[in-house]
Length: 90
Image: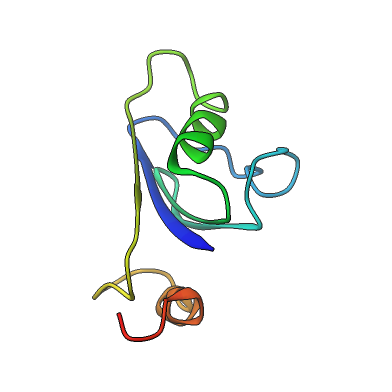
């Protein structure tokens, strides 16, 4: 399992985890332009699945999140969600 960070200049649909058939187990919305994606699939699969949910001209960045990053002022529970998915020792 990998956690991916996905950012777009377009609003990422709020139903990305619910009604979308993406290659993920869970999507955690950090804010309307930023989500964390829990998936066993490749970076390419996750990137394209998110891309298909956005307008054609939307900027998009998707990258794996190694370990538990340091965060500040994110929604309550985000740090715990990330730590629960972090690879031990990272």
